[in-house]
Image 1 (tube, rainbow, N blue to C red):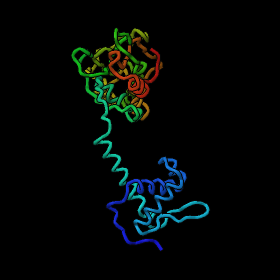
Image 2: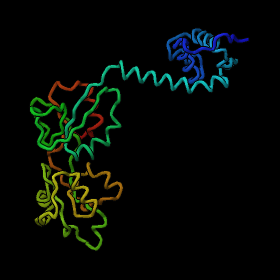
Image 3: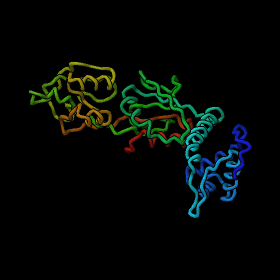
Image 4: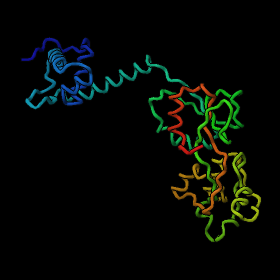
Amino acid sequence: MMETSNRRVDKLPLEWVRVFEAAGRTGNFTAAAREIGLTQAAVSQRIQNLERRLGARLFTREARGVTLTIEGEAWLPHVSQALRSLDRSADALFGKPLQKLVLSASASVIQLWIVPRLAGLDPGTQVQLSLTTMNIEPDFARSNAAIEIRYGSGHWPGMDAARLYAERLAPMAAPALLRGEPHWQALPRIAVSGPRPGWQEWAERSGDAAPPAPRYRFDSFVAALGAAREGLGVILGSEALCAAAVAEGALVRLSNDTLAPDDGYWMTARKDTVPARQWQALVAGLCDGSAG
């Protein structure tokens, strides 16, 4: 007969409860012992103590092992949820604070390249990443950003640099814009202000005739991309930044030629300002591994 003299749980040793949760979750006293760092006998003893305190059997002992009783199976999810809540609150209040790193980049690079890759960053880097939009050329002397996305050759004195992606440009347009027009060169052009090569460089690379004046000009690539998706004209699209639009059929590539400038977008930081492990994790998660 189990003791039923004390069913109060307000003074239950937390260790007993954790042992029960581990044993119930794994379905095995030996596995629970290994997880918690106790012997199998110690786990068994703590379970017995807990059962005695609660006045209820939580496990059925069998030759092949143990199984949860109806009472144990009903209690387990509540215990698991309570322990997770306890762990989360302890981490939030007393855990080591995350190091905050500010990353500055153009709105286009943040929206079209960085954001889709944030979920893949290694959570073990212990970094709180703060993203800010860069509206002017990067300048570490005036910026509070530890990391900046720069366009250039990748060679800046005193800087660590990793190529974000290999820039490759090609004409792209919405499928609806092409209906009834066999030659895309006759369609209106969309241009983007900034450091990237434009339609003039494309004509020199491909041998096309001098390009017409752009119908629309935008100061950000993401805005120009939105206009192209709406069928307003042909954009000299970045393969990396337009990959999703092409994959979903919102844009189609119009030429097999590619304009591949030597310069490109690089993730940069002043040497020795970002811990090596965090820098390496950001490079692994945000950069495509292209040489440079």
